Amino acid sequence: MTAIPTKIMYLVDHYAGPQAGTEGQLLKLVQHLDRSRFQPAITLFRGSDWIEHNSFGCPMQVLHLTKLASPTAIIKVSRFAQTLRREGYRLVHCFLNDVSLISPPLLRAFGIRVMVSRRDMGFWYTPGNLAVLRLVSPFVDSYVANCQAVAGVVEQKEWVPSRKISVVYNGLFPRADHHRELSQEAVPSRVFDKGTVVGIVANLKPIKRIDVLIQAIAVVRKQCPGIRLVVIGKDGPSNQGRSMREELEELAGRLGLCDQVVFMGAVDDPVPYIKQFAVAVLCSESEGLSNSMLEYMQARRPIICSDTGGNPELVQDGKNGFLVPVGDVVALAERLIRLLTDSALARRFGEAAGETVRSMCAPHRMLEEQMACYDAVLSGSRFSWSPNEASRTMQ
Image (tube, rainbow, N blue to C red; front, side):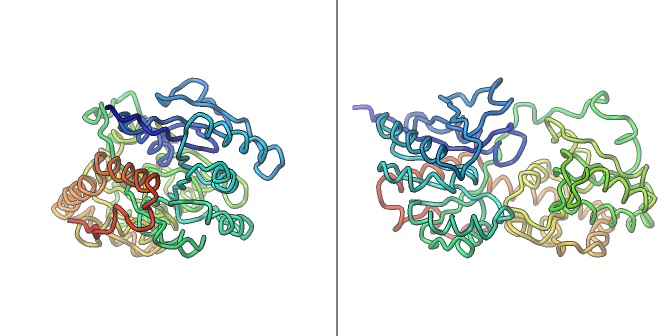
């Protein structure tokens, strides 16, 4: 007799598109989930333009919730949970943060098991929502973090017992067009036609500390006068409420780097640009497991990143890249100069980075470990077994 696939509902507050790391991982997980074992569907609290014009390849609905802390939200989520039970759903995976604030107790009240994903270092925590998360955690069967650093934050900040937390690294799926090169029409000719390019792929937010990289470029230029910085990412608000891009452009101007720093904005596919980077950088003050880092490594670029969050789980300092202290302009500049002036070292780092990510973030590995977590929760054995009991070390 053929086994009937288990119904699983992914609960998401909002989905703007797969370009962001977490959203991209959700799309790939749902698309590649073994349909002989699991039958996925997606429910969103709020709609989006992307949802209106695209599909996950599975059933999808929107609850149209605009305010979480309201009686209306409680009623709608309760009715939603009741419907799930009636339709035979046994597990809900809360994939983004907001849904995990109110949903677990309501879902458990109707006998539905709950899994929660955590994919960052808790930059969104406030005293208020931490208090709520600590109250809610007993109603969550299992947490899945995308790196050990995030798992540690969940344990320490949300007071979740370590036995309830698994680590499943992101899966880095091959692109159908991964051999595609950057067309000359795709970018202004002044960007890649001359000089050496240092690049960063990160949305323009204060937490990404792109200001540190710009200051480091000013130092590096004294020894590498042909250097150029390319910044790829969507603009956002600064701490002063202004355009982050405007503030960074002003900083570049004050440092005499107007012609050396190029802001590309958001691009649909950064990989062809990444392939043009002589050195790829990520200097955030907080990171979970950065998809930009994974794409750098897949493209076999030499990497410099800040020593924070999940970065040290990907980069072993001096072996497949460099780690630098958060906010340290001098250290970043020194490492940039070293890689820009030692092509053999840069090439060795790039090759080693490619091997690391191929091993750690293989798509089949992510899918099997994630489905193993589902099986454990559904069987009731989650608290005595984890797919990560064996230590995972970089080769």
